[in-house]
Image 1: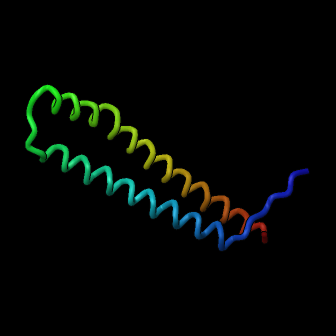
Image 2: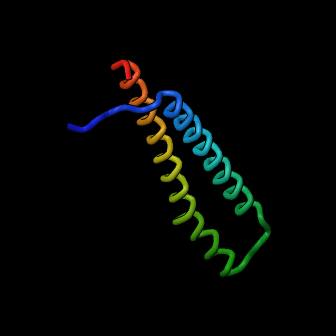
Length: 87
């Protein structure tokens, strides 16, 4: 039989850290997107760079931010369940 448990304060800190880093990642993505679009740069290289940002990097950062959000929700759910169980 598996043993289940955790230090609740540690889970609370993890939840806060995940949320903070998710917000930081979203701020980074927004800052980069804004700067990339505002930069005066023309030509094929600029077009390729912007296309790669829009098609690959921006969506990847969005997915990562979403995954971090989901992870934070899961940590909170597990902490609440352990707390309710008296862990």
